[in-house]
Structures are given as C-alpha cells and as structure tokens.
Length: 460
Image (cartoon, rainbow, N blue to C red; front, side, top):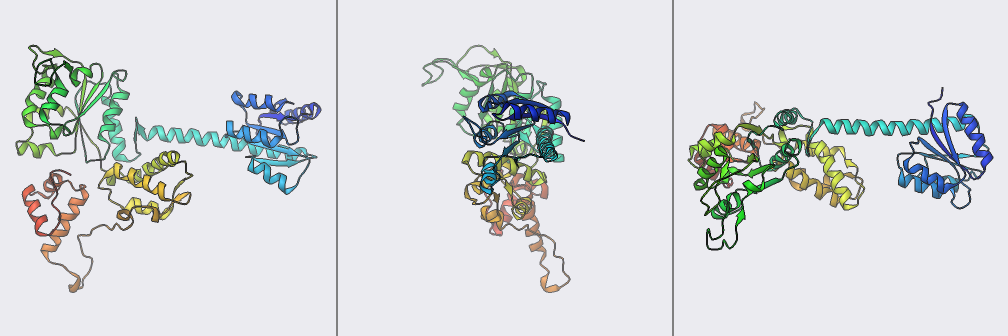
C-alpha cells in the first residue's frame, strides 16, 4: 500500500507528464506537473511538496541544474532524477547535484512507485526529526538558557513561576554559570519584556562613578557634572535593572541602594528631591553574601531586601549530560561562524568533557569548544583538539583503596587531599570551601600557603 505524497513532475514532454500523473494518481499520489523547469523552480518556493520528479534532458534548464537549485532552495525536499542515459557518470552527476535517487528510462511503474515512496518517507522522517528537535529544545530551554538536567529544570520551574512577578530576585552561583542569562531570561519572559533591560557591573567602576551611574546627577553636582544625567534606575523604567556582582558594591553606597529598593525612589546626586522609578530589580553575585555579612562587608538588611526570591545557578560539574548538550550547541554556533563542517564530538572527546570538573563552568566550556572547532581538521572534534587541561585532567582522590601499608598516607596528607578536593568541587571559591569545611577563610588560606598551593584572592 502506497504512503501517498505530493509529487511535482517536471518534463518538457507534455504527454509524459500526463501519463505519469495518471499512473501515480492511481497509486495514491497527489501529482502536479509542468513542462517548464523555471516554473517548477517557482512552485518549489512555496508549495508543500514531498518530492520532485524531474527528467534529466530538458530544454532551457537540464535536470541536474534544476536539482541543484531545488536542493539549494528547499534542501528538505528530495529530488528524483529520470534519464534515458543510464551511465555511471550520469548517476554520479545526479548524486553530486543533490539528487535523492536516480532512475533510467524506460521506467517500470513498480520501481518508480518504490522510489517515490522512499523519498516521501525520507521527507516526512526529516520533518518529524525537526519537530522532535524543536520539542526537545523547547523542553530544555528557558530563554537562552540551555540544559535538560534535574538541576536546570528546577531553575526553569522557579523562573517560570516568578517571570511576571515584580519581586526582587537574587541569582547566585559560581563565575561562568550564566547568572546574567537568568536575568535576561526573566526579563524576556516577563510582562516587562517590552521595556528596557539595563545592566551595571557593581565591581567594574569606582564608588563615585557607580553612584552617579545608578542614581544620576544634576548639573553642577560635582566638578565634571557639566550636564544632568539620568541614572540607570530611571533608565530602566518599565523594564529590568540588573545589579551584576552586587557583592562587590562599596559598603558606603549600600545604604543609599537599600533606601532606593525599599522606597522605590532615587535621589540624583545634587538633587533636592526624590524621583520614583518603576523597574524590576535582579541582582547577581558569585560571592558568598552570608560570609561577607559576618565580615561586615555587606549589609544584612540589604541582603534581605535583594534576596526576596533566590535562584542558585548550579555549577556545570553538577549538570551531568548538560555538558554534551551545551557542547553540541557551541559546536553548531562556532562551526557556522568559522564556515567549517563540524558535526559533533568523537566518543573519546565526549568522555573527556564529561570527566572534567569545569571550574570556569559554561564560559570555560564555550571557550574550549571554540578552540576545538578552530583547530579540528575533521568533522568530529577529537581528544587532540581539546585544551591540555581537559585532556590531562584527573580527578583527585581522598581515600586510598589499599591494604598495603606502603601505600597508606598520613592524616595530614588526607586532610590536604580532602581540602583540595572540596576546593575543586566548589570551583575554587575560597569562601564556599571554607564554609563547607567548617573553618575560617583565614585558616584555609594559611593551610594552602603551608602546602604550597596558591591561596589566590577573595571569592572564586
């Protein structure tokens, strides 16, 4: 029983087209035909076709040229080429032109029907694959966030529920986990999506400049204030204001920020009155705010004001197979930019990506894949295309699975290995490592210095 399908027959002999239309119509196909290849090309532009059946030897445009142009315009529509000359060179030419199949005259009805049924099934299978891919992508995305892990689905669930809310959101997580993307996703999926999205990095500018950026100033407020400036709170009216890396905001500026958030009013520098603003506030940080509060470097009342809704972005090492999902996405993006044909990862390379701890999280993975796409000489990324840190990575082990006394280690060595393992697990964030270990940050720094390990700076 035929699968049916919509077929466009192209041949410059009218009688041949009419005969094929009659024969194929009896076998369940819906047939259109034309004797003009240019007309056929126009029909493929908008028509909902399952397959094009074209003769090879035609006036004005031969079947190979028509095939090439149809494939270029509608690559999802298979083309079957018919010719009276069944040479190997002709067959190779048809395949190179992108033909799905190749038949020689005189055509046997059964062979033609089988070829067309195969082409129709191929077309419909491609459509189903695209539909499934779209469904999978929709189920693994929230805005530009991508991931299908349990950890990310929990994030999507919270985002979905609070997208239309005006409540302040605090997004925490290690550097490179996508905190700003969360803020943008909230804005784009919320009722303020038509308004502006305004972002400021609280750690990227000195205190006086940050205050002017946030609240604005009037003319003459300070030496260089030759013209008034509208602050970011007011620029974000009707939209969303992202306070990126709020944990690095100067302590002296925090009371003014707290008042603005509580009263929904801002006073520009040098102004004698306050101005109301209407913007949703999203704050992000990779710092441990509780630890900063204990050190009197972050106000507790400001913490409670920004932490109305808390979203913790999981580190990449806690997202399982999302590593490969994201890697494939980055391969597609960077291969297209580079104009290279790179389809995916070799199995051994995929294993290395899954084994690595990704201290730089999604940002590090993207850089890794961009490098690999640039270096690879094949259509699959190989282990040798990956950075050395990923190729040579070995997880640290705390326990020694041996009864041989010569292989056992001292308690001090066990402590050293465990501390380093915890530090690795939190992506190098000293504050989080100290909290997990139940020791002070200064104690952690001292131990690292004793062991000859780099203590680094505050935070990640």
